Length: 182
Image: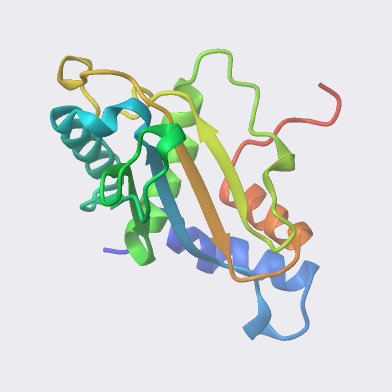
């Protein structure tokens, strides 16, 4: 069974974007991938904590996360070559749509004092980046299994190069942005 958001994209969102922006249906904006990443910080020396971060991100994404190792030594940060420095997972296809649906309808509304995501997260090429301060907003994360709370960066890549089209796509998908009047 296809993801609920993907069905809505095909039936409602794509026709709305085609009517609003493009003459060629092949140029309609769509989601390409979602990347979730966590910088380990001081956790890089604690293998148990790194494994806990990896397991948490894998649980949130529904897909195995990859540990990222440093490429070179940096003495100022006390980092040696091939030390684990972060965790990331890239979602595409059905898992991407399921994650976006869960993020917009379940996780973001659970954030305390949430007023929407800042519209300044667009990079000029149609991609949107934002950070979350803790992982406990996702329903599958159990508080008892967490060693320490950590934030994450979520990067949403779209098929368009226009920030205006990407904003409208994400708005129709259900990403809550801050209002202009507030």
